[in-house]
Image (cartoon, rainbow, N blue to C red; front, side, top):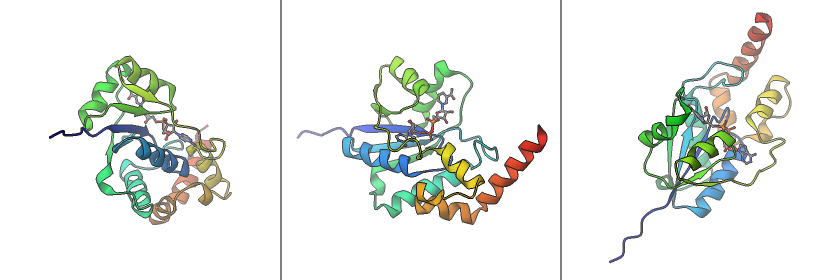
Length: 180
Ligand code: NAD
C-alpha cells in the first residue's frame, strides 16, 4: 500500500487586519498543497497604530473568514507566533510552533531570504491588487472614514464591530500624534 504524504505550505503574516488579499492567497495555496499553516505573525503586538489588533482577535477574523468561505477546517491550522529578536534562528522558532511543512509562501523579502537559506522551497504568491489590498491601506481608510469594508472579509468587519476596533484605532492615532 502506498501512503501519500501530505504536502503542507505555510503563510505567515501580521494580518493587521485580515484582508481580501490574504484570503485570495490562501485560496491559491490550497489549490497547490494539501494543507496550509497560517501563521499569525508578531503575535505579541497589539494596540499600536501599525499593529492594532491582538493575536486572538486576528485568529477570530481568520477562522471566521475561512468558515464563511466554506474552507474545509481539516485543511488549515491557524497558529499565532511571537517575533524573536534573532533572525538567524527565526526559522527554527517557526518550526517549533508548527506541523512539519515543505513549501513557504511569502512576498516578504526577509521571510523569503530566511526560509530559502534553510533550504525550504519558497513560492511568491501573485500580487492581488496590492495597491488597495494591504493592511496599511485598510488602516488608513479606517482612520479617514473611507470605504475599508470593501477590502476585508465580513468576518474582519464583524470583529472590529465586536471589539470597537475603529474607535481603538482612532484613539491610538490621536494619542500618537499628541505624543510628538
Ligand atoms: P502581511 O500581513 O503584510 O502579509 C502576509 C503575506 O501576505 C506576505 O507574504 C505578503 O506578501 C502577502 N500579501 C499581503 N497582501 C497581499 C496581496 N494583496 N496580494 C498578494 N500577497 C499579499 O505580513 P508580513 O509583514 O509579511 O508578515 C511577516 C511576519 O513575519 C511579521 O509578523 C514579522 O514580524 C515576522 N517575522 C519575524 C522575524 C523574527 O521574529 N525574527 C523575522 C522575519 C519575519
